[in-house]
Image (cartoon, rainbow, N blue to C red; front, side):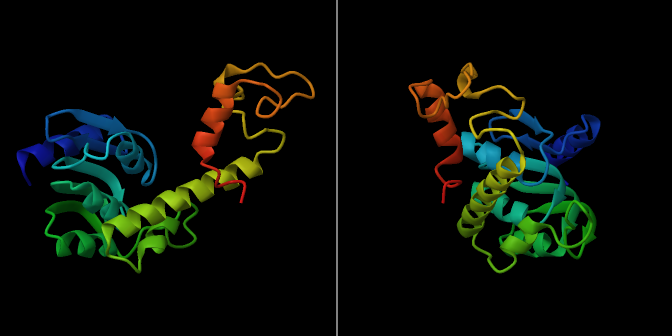
Length: 196
């Protein structure tokens, strides 16, 4: 294991993060988001951020491995890696080290395979994996929003309304001359995919 990879591995355990990234220009980024969310968030913010980076993650399944390949990471450490992810990284000659290798990553309820790993089992193409994962995350966000009773889609998870628009009885800020910025932010976040 390289000194750089050892550094991100130590940061992963020391700071109780879920994912730690050391960029090619020496910046250290940490995340406590679960699943593949740290990777997709970093890729959305700056597609070049992970290129040439060293990364340490608590759990790497095939979905995460495809994201790392898509992003162009240099080397990888995983506390737990699935066999599918190990094969995927190995075929592309990306050096990786693991604490433990498992047949597959389990879902959060421990009743089967992780949905993201399952989603990517039949592809080895990083770009296709990335696109599938983004679509699945958007689908899951829409489903989560629909399950929250009494909450309009314009409300944020902390109960505030988009762009801090004050709600007036009988007035939908998205339709009746409300905050144009709030409506734009909502539309941008949902990208129109929830209305299908």
